[in-house]
Image (cartoon, rainbow over all chains, first blue to last red; front, side, top):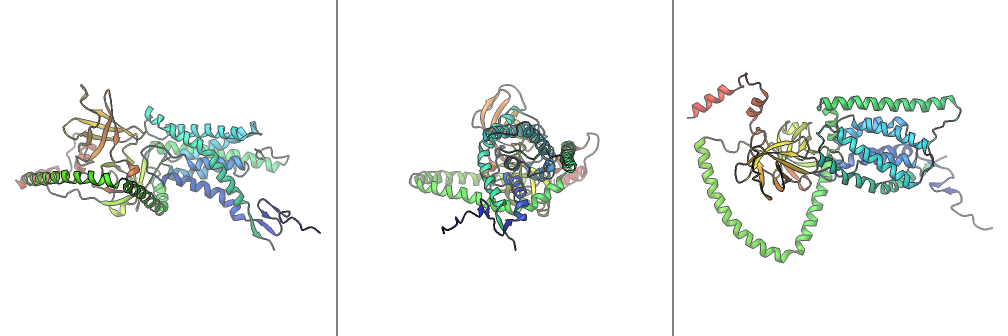
Length: 184
Length: 307
């Protein structure tokens, strides 16, 4: 008798025999990455102009694109509140914008159920650009033309970084669903 | 890409669940709008939670600052190694010139001390309150704030000027026990009175929000500024002591110039927090014109007693 293919009883997340997903990883990984993403832009550089993409927001949208049903629609409230503590925007700005964008992306998804990656990328790019512009308007500082022009590199960087973030999040999604819990 | 399970079957319970989610999200957005309005109206409303959050991540900030600075140092030392020979000769020439200048500066310092003694000014009145590190900045928001690793426990208070060894960086906006938030010069709400280093051309340096400063001349007329002029603090307003480097003129425009910050926060590691230069002047500026100043009689008495 031929030997059974050793991969036959496993899927991409590991063996299916007496192994299950870890509930801790299953729930914690998405939220932790978003919280880390909110803190991340404050750390690496004290730049004189806004440059680093709003990582918390991008990671939230990337998770949403990869696993559409993962977050409840109202998740923008708690996560946005955390982001507001670090972003430097007036408190409440991310709560409002993240909540609204969760609703908007849900409506968009119902309107266009089947999308290509390029379409998702474009949607997210426009979403980020709108988020940064509205954020600048609501930032409480007087709006100046040079200030608006200075947003362009940040928007461009956010747009270019999205495919990379999606890759990383896809890897983290595999980690999240790894079958590491032993049953029985 | 698959879509989420929005059409939630014929189960009433699942349908109500989806509906409740939307209602909660809508309420979330509304609450956010109210909080946003509140914090735009009273910017200091949420200082407490922000301070606590910043305290919580400050160890991470310190670690990342160390890595950032050492990374820059490593690149510098490699670059220095590659250019060692020509740089050595150049530095020797520069040291010769610098020795002469140092001697001149010593003479000036003596003269300065003599004149200060004549005027009865106390020396070393503006010792730094604290010396600390930049923990990070709000690099993704269009507001320019930075966080430093010293707070009210070290004696830091709102309004104190923050400077690096190159020049002014900004001033303290919010204080929590171990960290503080700094309004950087490039924020579009920051205004700083300056003058040209070698004469008395006075102006305001306003942040443009894109990393540059707008120099607005107070006396309009023929624009005397030239590219490369160095602007220093004038001491007007009472926050900053005069003569600290601020910006270097980059481009001349009609009502002044566009200037670059001399102390770019990205290249800054350690900063010192100084006392407010003239707290009395700030007090005077806040007070209505018809009220007497607190302590002004005492100051006059002290001045007359010293004579």
